[in-house]
Length: 410
Image (cartoon, rainbow, N blue to C red; front, side):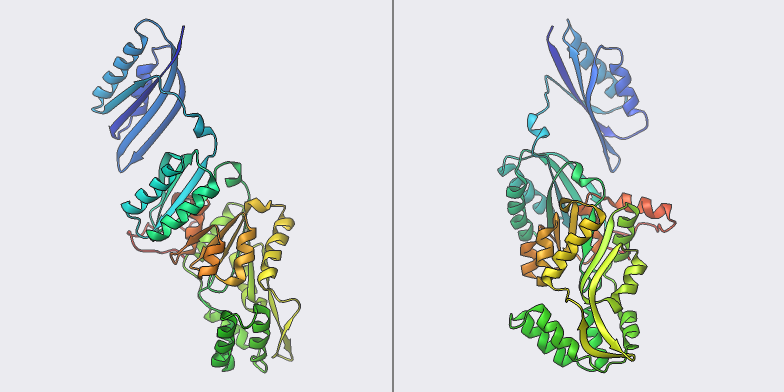
């Protein structure tokens, strides 16, 4: 006796009892449930069930009739296909493609889907994971090479002004991760050296040195030494004033709070100064911080930096050291940064995220986020807006969802 399958798809207005009615209609037949998926979008339900059975006289037709009668009683549409089999490609080369748009337009989705298809990939499922502050959707697909797909989709995403991340599906998307963030112009909207220069009356001189560094005339360490020298004689109490002037990037608190709630390790690594960002790190509950240290003697800045300078290589080393300290494989590390000083760190991480970054950092990273909300990075990790709000509700922090286009992230 041959083994058969029947694929049943029911669709229509959602209401209580649809799932029960469909499975009750099949309960009188000698079938086994092989696969099932249900989705409700804006009150419209799609329920798909794959059942298997040993073929017998009249069984497929009687089963299809029973299913159609159940759907008709609910005023729903139904389609049935005998002999539907699972595609073997769905079990290999499984990928998740996360797309962020503000706004997300149909042309962008069409272009990215085209690139997936052109590389032999199939989109098995599409789901929305966030509606604000950006619209985020995930293609759950199979059959395409991750690296090949990442290159193609990065180009298509740039053309359509959306952000995209391509990652292998599997266990590494679960479990504990390490997230290491740059500080200046990433976690915060400011450049700490500029705030200190303003307090010291050396804004113009510091800006000139920064321009030379950006032009390639000075490396980061040399430029930092020259800029800090201009702070000589500054009263150390100015550090408190600078700390009070810092502005967190929208979504920074939400990002850190959510990752901490999930048991992730969050660390900060900065070419700035521990005297300024140390208290902020404590406030955000991060697991570790590495930054430069200003020499202070008798309550006054000497114009010197203490210890090894945290430069481009230093940031990469910090990422590796934190991973070793917390026993987290490098493939489960995420680095977030915006500048040339972050490139080595972005390349070393399992997932390098360029946040509103300059071109060299975007080129080095695995994905880019171009919206000004730092908590959008959560969606790249498969964390949904509902997950975030659920955790906040448990902590008594939830607020009503804002209207589309508004962002109340912290």
